[in-house]
Image (cartoon, rainbow, N blue to C red; front, side, top):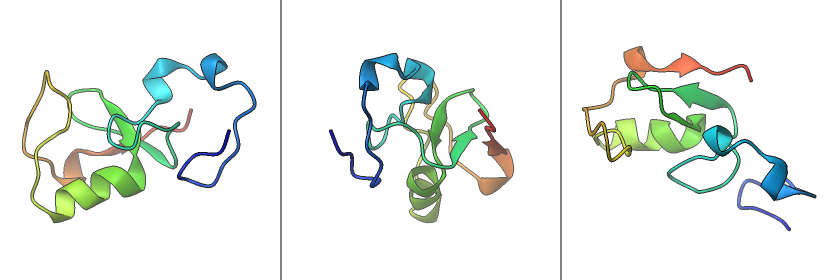
Length: 74
């Protein structure tokens, strides 16, 4: 199976759900953590920040800022 971020996953079911981006629904590429603790692909969440968007997490919905992102070195 090939995802939109150009990586091939042999056993996608073995990937921790916390490492699946809620924006693109693929395993996180350059993962970052928001102030609410949600993990997203760096490029996905940066796109949200550029558009002045809120956190995609349904339980959070806070306005996003690059200052509130922490790299997730998983």
